[in-house]
Image 1 (cartoon, rainbow, N blue to C red):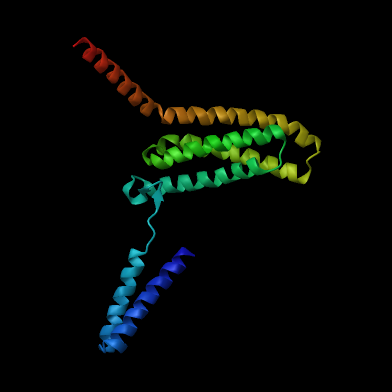
Image 2: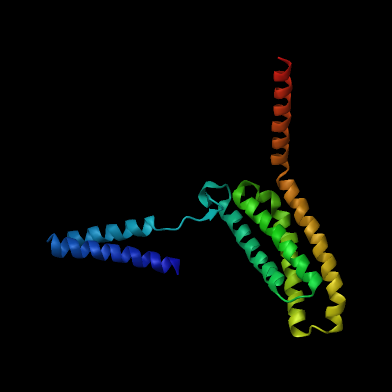
Length: 202
């Protein structure tokens, strides 16, 4: 859809230029046509959307296209978790799915702001996040088809336990990602305390 709009805008710009040059400025039809084509190409090029991860253009990130695909797949998995968190599931599953979504959203927001760290979270994306989405998707299907079946009754506590494990995994991954920032803040605080102590002795 965006590509169609982009093409249409470029076409209208070129057409407008041609009509003005040929009919108003009375330029030669060939010259008017060539300039119109150039304007079409320029507008089409300039209107090209810039792919970004967070606020960073993909082209400015090493391996940007691959990382963009990883983030895109992650957002798809998050949509599954979000859907589960908004569905009328068992109360215990509902609460845990909401918590998992909140944690996952925090992680993706952080990685969107720090795309250079996406590679270090590959295990999180390829296993933990994908597994969480897969478990909840299958659970929702079972609930929708036969909510009172023995299989669902047996699966509910197992799903709840799996979500607890995934929550721990999400938190562990987040803590690993922000570890350097925490150390930087602690170092700044330590430096501040030393400075205040030295100034107090003067």
